[in-house]
Length: 164
Image 1 (spheres, rainbow, N blue to C red):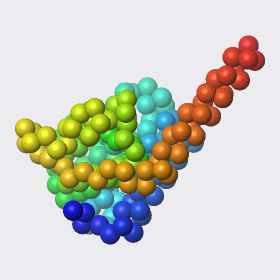
Image 2: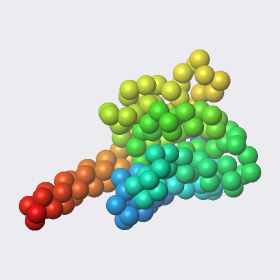
Image 3: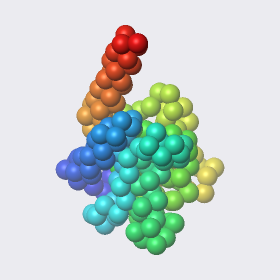
Image 4: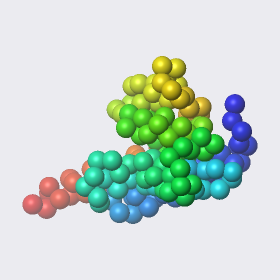
């Protein structure tokens, strides 16, 4: 059961959406994340793989790293992650290792989701830590960011092909 009200959840997910919009503004896949502790954002991140040419610069990884720096601690036991898409296996592993208390995410990721879609990393009782999962948060708003981005990308690619 969530310790947040629906209003709180929407507030924090809207902050993650703002991060996703930052990614879109720099032509990155629009995924955003925030880490919350005691009602305050202590970490923010948005996708930066293309910009950084670093495969590990996913929104979740950046938000977790910033939260670690803010707290001066690798343990995020009383922290909550809000992210606009179901995390991949790398990010799910980081969530477990950071010992986040809970995660709230938008739509499932049928091609890479490792929370409940392709794998169930966060709730696997064989691991030393499990994370409370809340899926489908503001799902349509988050999905719309992604579908619009990829639709626009296809249009730009088609236009570039036709111009050549």
